[in-house]
Length: 98
Image (spheres, rainbow, N blue to C red):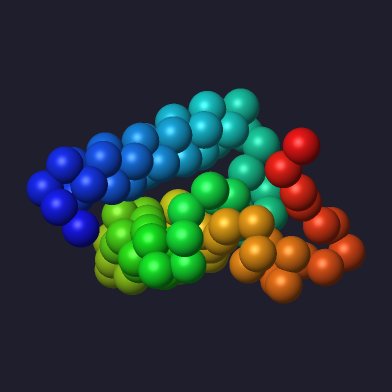
């Protein structure tokens, strides 16, 4: 991936991180975090980029409770998928581009 491609990838990673954190914070402030939170992202990326994005999102959001001082987890699990991976993981809820 060239430098411009890396910049776009990094920008998307940052966007997804802050989008999730903002949504989580608003739900927390409304006292609506009663169940484990799963962050699922459906993106139009090829498989190699989806795998890389999965790793980056996990690094950014730290699913589970890896830091000792945290009493609660920010996200129980995270998953980034493309259309093919979504349909393999969730066959009861298929997606397609229209």
